[in-house]
Length: 334
Picture 1 (cartoon, rainbow, N blue to C red):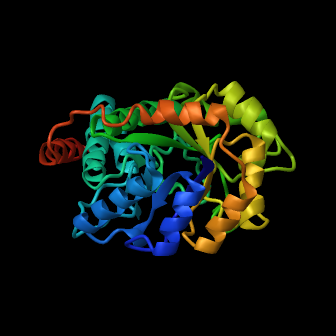
Picture 2 (picture 1 turned 90 degrees about the vertical axis):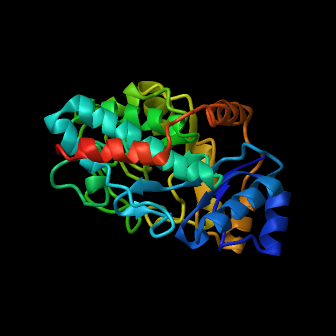
Picture 3 (picture 1 turned 45 degrees about the vertical axis):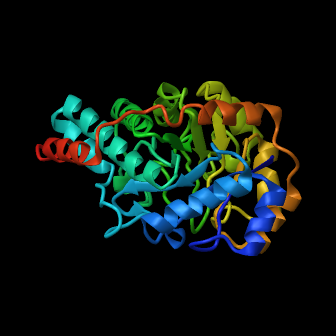
């Protein structure tokens, strides 16, 4: 199995994509708005991805956070609130905020499971900081580590109840970044003591099935390499200080925070200790370059992937309308 999660170009697999995915056997796939037209189309697409992989439980990922980050959009799919809404409700009524986050996540998961998507890149455990770049902003679950952890746990539980699993991101924390890693490499100059605050939610949710790294440079831990390509940060902070032992993926390697060719970027994150490289462009030639740069997935990575995917499909959530009604009633207090 190739230690990569790859994007694809459109609403259906091309013949060339189908042949490539069969031969390369990537660990999973990630979908974007370009891949989502309506329920019937999207279900057919995910069925075809399972068929080419030969795995009924192949990870099929999406970023369906709510607010400004939603790949599946109205009118074919519901609109979901930004995650910051639940942080605001928690401010007034913590128990209500936690329950609203849980039922909202379960409602999202139901819409994903219906079309064959089994992994949602949510929740963000980035602790929001005043003055930071707005790339995180209202996507965050709050300014306080305890609140972020409590709401993050509710989101993970809700996703699983609806039939999906979550990916905690962006470990070890993107909340202080003064730049958007899609466009440039952010540098977080806080010292190690201050950064303990950012680690707290990830440590509290270290049993999450999957996590996504941050393309951020933290000189307190590694003066030269951003987290996604830093063996020091992955070994001593993510696996060590945080204690995360789930499947670790990079953030999207297309982002401008990193340098090098697609293959060089993919090889760098695997060499640093990520289990899988996430490459989202969907451009076949770039996917081929990533595949050509990587060997087989490690035994530890395969075990972590199997352990994560064993958690899908456990849920028996209520119907979507009931979940959405309960969420909206709770949010009315915020």
